[in-house]
Length: 263
Image (cartoon, rainbow, N blue to C red; front, side, top):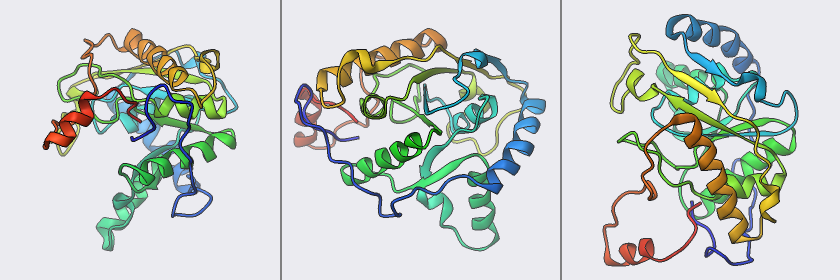
Protein backbone atom coordinates (compact mmCIF):
# COMPACT_ATOMS: atom_id res chain seq x y z
CA UNK A 1 0.00 0.00 0.00
CA UNK A 2 1.17 3.51 -0.60
CA UNK A 3 1.94 5.95 2.20
CA UNK A 4 3.83 9.02 3.21
CA UNK A 5 7.61 9.06 3.35
CA UNK A 6 9.07 6.99 6.18
CA UNK A 7 9.98 9.02 9.23
CA UNK A 8 7.61 11.91 8.57
CA UNK A 9 5.04 13.06 11.10
CA UNK A 10 2.20 13.07 8.60
CA UNK A 11 -0.46 10.40 8.59
CA UNK A 12 -2.54 9.56 5.52
CA UNK A 13 -6.11 10.79 5.48
CA UNK A 14 -8.40 7.77 5.56
CA UNK A 15 -11.70 8.43 3.85
CA UNK A 16 -14.89 6.47 3.62
CA UNK A 17 -14.99 3.70 1.03
CA UNK A 18 -17.12 4.15 -2.06
CA UNK A 19 -19.10 1.15 -0.84
CA UNK A 20 -20.68 3.23 1.95
CA UNK A 21 -19.77 4.38 5.42
CA UNK A 22 -20.32 0.97 6.92
CA UNK A 23 -18.52 -2.10 5.53
CA UNK A 24 -20.61 -5.15 4.76
CA UNK A 25 -20.37 -7.66 7.61
CA UNK A 26 -20.73 -11.39 7.66
CA UNK A 27 -24.24 -12.31 8.76
CA UNK A 28 -26.33 -15.47 8.54
CA UNK A 29 -24.33 -16.88 5.65
CA UNK A 30 -21.11 -16.60 7.68
CA UNK A 31 -22.72 -18.15 10.76
CA UNK A 32 -23.92 -21.05 8.63
CA UNK A 33 -20.55 -21.35 6.90
CA UNK A 34 -18.69 -21.33 10.21
CA UNK A 35 -20.99 -24.06 11.50
CA UNK A 36 -20.58 -26.21 8.37
CA UNK A 37 -17.27 -25.37 6.68
CA UNK A 38 -15.26 -25.23 9.90
CA UNK A 39 -16.03 -28.73 11.20
CA UNK A 40 -15.83 -30.19 7.68
CA UNK A 41 -12.41 -28.63 7.05
CA UNK A 42 -11.14 -29.83 10.42
CA UNK A 43 -12.39 -33.33 9.66
CA UNK A 44 -10.79 -33.52 6.21
CA UNK A 45 -7.54 -31.65 6.78
CA UNK A 46 -6.99 -32.27 10.50
CA UNK A 47 -5.12 -28.98 11.02
CA UNK A 48 -2.75 -28.70 13.94
CA UNK A 49 -3.79 -25.60 15.88
CA UNK A 50 -1.57 -24.11 18.56
CA UNK A 51 -2.07 -21.09 20.82
CA UNK A 52 -5.85 -20.70 20.50
CA UNK A 53 -5.97 -19.87 24.21
CA UNK A 54 -3.74 -16.84 23.60
CA UNK A 55 -6.34 -15.07 21.43
CA UNK A 56 -8.39 -12.45 23.35
CA UNK A 57 -12.00 -13.59 23.60
CA UNK A 58 -13.50 -10.13 23.16
CA UNK A 59 -12.64 -6.67 21.89
CA UNK A 60 -10.87 -5.75 18.65
CA UNK A 61 -8.07 -8.03 17.46
CA UNK A 62 -5.83 -7.94 14.40
CA UNK A 63 -4.54 -11.29 13.16
CA UNK A 64 -1.28 -10.65 11.28
CA UNK A 65 -0.18 -13.71 9.32
CA UNK A 66 2.36 -14.91 6.83
CA UNK A 67 0.85 -15.61 3.40
CA UNK A 68 1.61 -18.75 1.42
CA UNK A 69 -1.60 -19.83 -0.29
CA UNK A 70 -5.14 -18.87 -1.27
CA UNK A 71 -6.44 -21.14 1.50
CA UNK A 72 -4.73 -19.07 4.19
CA UNK A 73 -7.93 -17.03 4.35
CA UNK A 74 -9.83 -20.24 5.05
CA UNK A 75 -7.30 -21.74 7.46
CA UNK A 76 -7.31 -18.77 9.83
CA UNK A 77 -11.12 -18.53 10.27
CA UNK A 78 -11.33 -22.32 10.66
CA UNK A 79 -8.67 -22.36 13.38
CA UNK A 80 -9.51 -19.12 15.19
CA UNK A 81 -11.60 -19.31 18.38
CA UNK A 82 -13.75 -16.35 17.28
CA UNK A 83 -15.19 -14.99 14.01
CA UNK A 84 -12.67 -13.38 11.66
CA UNK A 85 -13.20 -10.84 8.88
CA UNK A 86 -10.82 -10.23 6.02
CA UNK A 87 -10.92 -8.26 2.81
CA UNK A 88 -11.30 -9.91 -0.59
CA UNK A 89 -11.37 -8.53 -4.12
CA UNK A 90 -14.79 -7.08 -4.92
CA UNK A 91 -14.79 -9.03 -8.20
CA UNK A 92 -15.37 -12.21 -6.18
CA UNK A 93 -18.80 -10.84 -5.23
CA UNK A 94 -19.84 -9.42 -8.58
CA UNK A 95 -20.32 -12.51 -10.76
CA UNK A 96 -23.65 -13.27 -12.34
CA UNK A 97 -25.69 -16.43 -12.71
CA UNK A 98 -25.39 -19.55 -10.57
CA UNK A 99 -21.60 -19.49 -10.68
CA UNK A 100 -21.46 -15.91 -9.46
CA UNK A 101 -23.98 -16.60 -6.72
CA UNK A 102 -22.06 -19.67 -5.58
CA UNK A 103 -18.76 -17.77 -5.44
CA UNK A 104 -20.37 -14.87 -3.58
CA UNK A 105 -21.98 -17.22 -1.05
CA UNK A 106 -18.69 -19.02 -0.49
CA UNK A 107 -16.74 -15.86 0.27
CA UNK A 108 -19.49 -14.55 2.53
CA UNK A 109 -19.48 -17.91 4.32
CA UNK A 110 -15.78 -17.61 5.18
CA UNK A 111 -16.07 -14.05 6.47
CA UNK A 112 -14.80 -12.12 3.45
CA UNK A 113 -15.79 -8.48 2.92
CA UNK A 114 -15.59 -6.99 -0.59
CA UNK A 115 -13.16 -4.17 -1.26
CA UNK A 116 -11.71 -2.67 -4.39
CA UNK A 117 -8.01 -3.40 -4.38
CA UNK A 118 -5.29 -1.07 -5.56
CA UNK A 119 -2.88 1.66 -4.56
CA UNK A 120 -3.55 5.21 -3.47
CA UNK A 121 -7.13 5.89 -2.42
CA UNK A 122 -8.13 2.23 -2.84
CA UNK A 123 -5.49 1.24 -0.28
CA UNK A 124 -6.73 3.88 2.14
CA UNK A 125 -10.31 2.72 1.64
CA UNK A 126 -9.24 -0.81 2.58
CA UNK A 127 -7.63 0.43 5.78
CA UNK A 128 -10.76 2.42 6.57
CA UNK A 129 -12.99 -0.65 6.21
CA UNK A 130 -10.79 -2.58 8.61
CA UNK A 131 -10.65 0.33 11.06
CA UNK A 132 -14.45 0.48 11.20
CA UNK A 133 -14.66 -3.23 11.99
CA UNK A 134 -12.08 -2.92 14.76
CA UNK A 135 -13.86 0.06 16.28
CA UNK A 136 -16.91 -2.19 16.68
CA UNK A 137 -14.86 -4.74 18.63
CA UNK A 138 -14.55 -7.24 15.77
CA UNK A 139 -11.51 -9.09 14.43
CA UNK A 140 -9.73 -8.69 11.11
CA UNK A 141 -6.98 -10.70 9.45
CA UNK A 142 -4.21 -9.12 7.38
CA UNK A 143 -1.07 -10.21 5.58
CA UNK A 144 1.72 -7.67 6.26
CA UNK A 145 3.76 -9.05 3.34
CA UNK A 146 1.06 -7.71 1.03
CA UNK A 147 0.87 -10.72 -1.26
CA UNK A 148 1.62 -14.43 -1.30
CA UNK A 149 5.18 -15.66 -1.01
CA UNK A 150 5.91 -17.84 -4.05
CA UNK A 151 9.25 -19.14 -2.76
CA UNK A 152 8.29 -19.91 0.84
CA UNK A 153 10.39 -17.14 2.38
CA UNK A 154 9.03 -14.51 4.76
CA UNK A 155 9.23 -11.03 3.24
CA UNK A 156 9.47 -7.66 4.97
CA UNK A 157 6.25 -6.35 6.39
CA UNK A 158 4.45 -3.31 5.05
CA UNK A 159 3.40 -0.76 7.63
CA UNK A 160 -0.36 -0.73 7.03
CA UNK A 161 -1.02 -3.31 9.76
CA UNK A 162 1.01 -1.28 12.27
CA UNK A 163 -0.77 1.94 11.28
CA UNK A 164 -4.12 0.23 11.86
CA UNK A 165 -3.06 -1.15 15.24
CA UNK A 166 -1.60 2.15 16.41
CA UNK A 167 -4.65 4.07 15.21
CA UNK A 168 -7.24 1.79 16.87
CA UNK A 169 -5.32 0.43 19.86
CA UNK A 170 -6.18 -3.13 18.83
CA UNK A 171 -3.72 -5.82 19.92
CA UNK A 172 -1.98 -7.74 17.14
CA UNK A 173 -1.97 -11.54 17.31
CA UNK A 174 0.80 -12.93 15.10
CA UNK A 175 -0.10 -16.06 13.15
CA UNK A 176 2.27 -18.59 11.62
CA UNK A 177 0.86 -20.78 8.85
CA UNK A 178 2.81 -23.90 7.88
CA UNK A 179 2.02 -26.21 4.96
CA UNK A 180 -0.80 -24.27 3.29
CA UNK A 181 1.40 -23.88 0.20
CA UNK A 182 1.61 -27.66 -0.03
CA UNK A 183 -2.13 -28.17 0.41
CA UNK A 184 -2.91 -25.66 -2.33
CA UNK A 185 0.09 -24.38 -4.31
CA UNK A 186 -0.31 -21.33 -6.50
CA UNK A 187 -2.15 -22.30 -9.69
CA UNK A 188 -3.87 -25.34 -8.17
CA UNK A 189 -7.64 -25.43 -8.70
CA UNK A 190 -8.42 -27.70 -5.76
CA UNK A 191 -6.66 -28.28 -2.44
CA UNK A 192 -4.88 -31.56 -1.81
CA UNK A 193 -6.20 -33.83 0.92
CA UNK A 194 -2.83 -35.55 1.42
CA UNK A 195 -1.19 -32.77 3.38
CA UNK A 196 -1.79 -31.29 6.84
CA UNK A 197 -1.38 -27.69 7.86
CA UNK A 198 -0.35 -26.06 11.11
CA UNK A 199 -1.83 -22.81 12.41
CA UNK A 200 0.06 -21.18 15.28
CA UNK A 201 -1.33 -18.20 17.20
CA UNK A 202 1.13 -16.12 19.19
CA UNK A 203 0.74 -13.93 22.24
CA UNK A 204 -0.96 -10.56 21.55
CA UNK A 205 1.39 -7.67 20.83
CA UNK A 206 0.72 -4.16 22.14
CA UNK A 207 2.42 -1.93 19.59
CA UNK A 208 1.46 1.32 21.34
CA UNK A 209 4.83 1.30 23.12
CA UNK A 210 6.45 2.38 19.85
CA UNK A 211 4.62 5.71 19.65
CA UNK A 212 1.65 7.26 17.85
CA UNK A 213 0.28 6.27 14.44
CA UNK A 214 1.46 9.62 13.09
CA UNK A 215 5.10 8.60 13.57
CA UNK A 216 6.79 6.85 10.67
CA UNK A 217 9.42 5.47 13.04
CA UNK A 218 6.71 4.02 15.31
CA UNK A 219 4.99 2.36 12.35
CA UNK A 220 8.26 0.81 11.19
CA UNK A 221 9.27 -0.45 14.64
CA UNK A 222 5.80 -1.86 15.26
CA UNK A 223 5.83 -3.62 11.89
CA UNK A 224 9.23 -5.15 12.58
CA UNK A 225 8.03 -6.44 15.96
CA UNK A 226 4.95 -7.98 14.33
CA UNK A 227 7.04 -9.64 11.62
CA UNK A 228 9.44 -11.00 14.25
CA UNK A 229 6.44 -12.57 15.98
CA UNK A 230 5.26 -14.16 12.74
CA UNK A 231 8.78 -15.44 11.98
CA UNK A 232 9.06 -17.06 15.42
CA UNK A 233 5.87 -19.00 14.68
CA UNK A 234 6.39 -19.91 11.02
CA UNK A 235 10.14 -20.59 11.07
CA UNK A 236 10.48 -19.38 7.49
CA UNK A 237 13.70 -18.18 5.92
CA UNK A 238 13.79 -14.39 5.92
CA UNK A 239 13.89 -12.76 2.49
CA UNK A 240 15.07 -9.39 3.81
CA UNK A 241 13.25 -7.49 1.05
CA UNK A 242 9.70 -6.51 0.17
CA UNK A 243 7.58 -8.89 -1.85
CA UNK A 244 6.85 -6.76 -4.89
CA UNK A 245 7.01 -7.26 -8.67
CA UNK A 246 10.19 -6.17 -10.47
CA UNK A 247 10.16 -2.52 -11.52
CA UNK A 248 9.28 -2.14 -15.20
CA UNK A 249 10.44 1.42 -15.79
CA UNK A 250 13.43 3.54 -14.71
CA UNK A 251 11.11 5.71 -12.60
CA UNK A 252 9.71 2.66 -10.78
CA UNK A 253 13.26 1.42 -10.13
CA UNK A 254 14.17 4.76 -8.57
CA UNK A 255 11.03 4.72 -6.42
CA UNK A 256 11.80 1.22 -5.13
CA UNK A 257 15.40 2.22 -4.35
CA UNK A 258 14.39 5.28 -2.32
CA UNK A 259 13.63 4.77 1.40
CA UNK A 260 9.87 4.89 1.96
CA UNK A 261 7.14 3.02 3.73
CA UNK A 262 5.22 0.28 1.98
CA UNK A 263 1.64 0.19 3.14
